[in-house]
Image: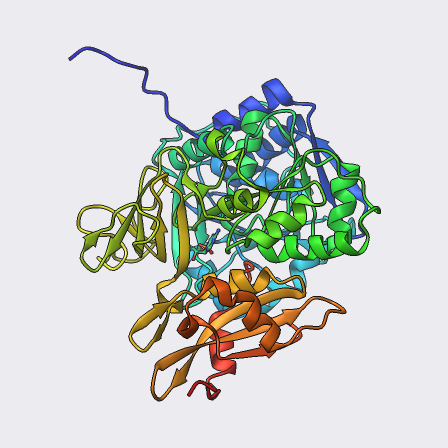
Length: 539
Ligand code: AMP
């Protein structure tokens, strides 16, 4: 056989080296607990990540062992993103917003024995500790306060020089990191990302039509680093050399806008609820911040609606909508306009940009209906299934079952979607969130998007409530924007032109806030529980 290319493994050590070699002086900025800003750069991250790797190996961490992080977004967390994998270990970012029981379950299921914990999060982690077999807690002193007695300091742990540190052989298929699904149903499940998947994903999301990431960018990582690797962007950042901004624990809209202005942010990553509060704040104080840097706002994790796209556009902020899952690495699709769309009226462009979008390179999509694979006609809906080198082949510690991976090798997302003739995917629901009324399906996402298009509405979630005749009927639970007045009849009339009469919610209930999951999705299980005895007013 003729020889082809060199067998050089794809791994994150290459990304770390690249960050130092070519972009060493590019800045990494973290907001500290006292709200001051700490500045470092890729050269320092490289040095400290290698010290961490050396210390972990000296502490007996073996290839494939999971090492946990219980941390806010910061440059220290970025060190762990690289230092743990280049020790041959597995970066396990723990979602600190879960219940102590779920956190303990995750720590044990992953097998974490060493955990890096922000000092400000230590009281929270101490609630979990008795239920785990964690042996060493390394405390990261982000607040600058002395490390409490009985704990090891991260700075002492990484004190030894690591200029002689040799990376272990890092096979590209070896585990690099693991994340748990935020699981609104059942226990969280572990997904292990390989070095190869992380590198391929970094290349793919960085492309011009995707996130268009370059060394000229200043990227604001608002998405928690414990939520699927902050969408893989920290890895891509070292590769392209963009500067990074981390908000720490300060997630209020004004705090975020201050950083967007002072650090001249060009790309910010976050879930829709965060960008909704940014929009409301800017609507109230349009001239307070100078944001004229062509900022792109990547939004994912839950559906965005055209009204938010247009609302932020009015402030010079451009939404980039994406869909992904922990089981991917994690971005699957992103929405961008093609040249043929640029002459369309603004409203139509917002509608295209609010779709979940086109698959990023290396991803394949199909829609599976009851009668097989569905045509790409924008109408036929079914379960979205995906395939590719950045899609998981199974869950940690669990047998692979056909309800997750089909016999012909596609991953079943549990999302209900359609794909149009141009290849744009649109999610209409989660399988479990669809509403079945009189034998016909109603999309809760379509109703939510339409209601959230009303200027007086901040947020709206639609759930099914029981009905003796129709089985289920849609109920809309709505949060008004501050100081706004709107009635159920106003909302029904507003959305009526876009739906069949039987699809319209019979009732609209106004509440002060909606429950969200730890990663920003509507927590529909909680809403369904809250309204389980609600009787629909439908005849
Ligand atoms: P997670 O693994 O926590 O990121 O959750 C993945 C799930 O979030 C997906 O299967 C979707 O149900 C939902 N999701 C993520 N991004 C979007 C989006 N842009 N639009 C609608 N749903 C989304």
